[in-house]
Image (tube, rainbow, N blue to C red; front, side):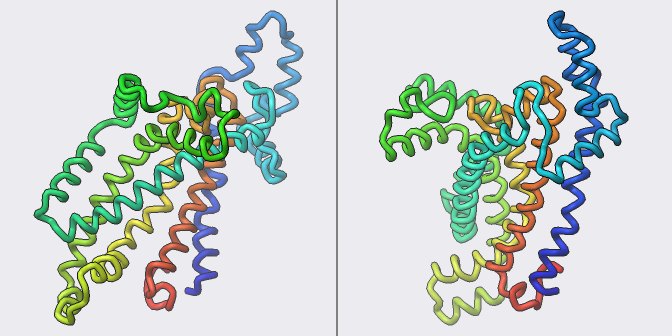
Length: 328
């Protein structure tokens, strides 16, 4: 299968997710007792006729599938609907928060991925070293401690130390800073949330990379390279790394949306102004269209993540580029 056909095939397989996940969310939201307009009905300043007019305007008095059909029709025009809680279009709210979530998840994923690959290779190369034992202990601890507890612990330590901000994305005097000071200020605010969000990903990828690298070290071609006196670092980073990294690249497509979902809790605890806090407020307020918009974003990330993993596999695996192996 050619590369173009491969991408097209993967896109067609993932396309139903863009419709099924919002449909499932739509159905689950209607299973929850009540809706946003129930709070309006309890407001004596708002007449029942006004509430009925809103329900008719957004087709919320129709059956569930009919409502979903109307919403899907508007979505094809890039109209995500209207947020009743925020009193503005859903797309404007999502776009205003999307960059913040992308920054947080991108930094978390980048440091976790790079360190997991590098340290996983070193741990596999020296399995009886102190470094391997220390990293194994850290990985087990990171997988065992819940994110919310680690976040609270770090916030407590930061409050006691006083060297890191406890929440938000920017300082109060952010607008008066120079360009470099603004970047440093955002990085300082990123330390706690990105560490909490990335440490679990690092632990999982590290253990996987170490296991894969150990298996590669036992292959016959590694012994052949050593016989020919190929330098150890070249064997480690060129031959072992390129063969061991494939499973990590394959998992990339599933980790991106999972990371965004996990960012919600971290954003809430640290006050990071991203999609996670918006999603929580939307669910609590039963703001139907805002919840659906968030699910569309997660669905798109799932599709983009899988396509990105395919592209990276083409880069790191020569067999796929030559059409002799890899996913079909």
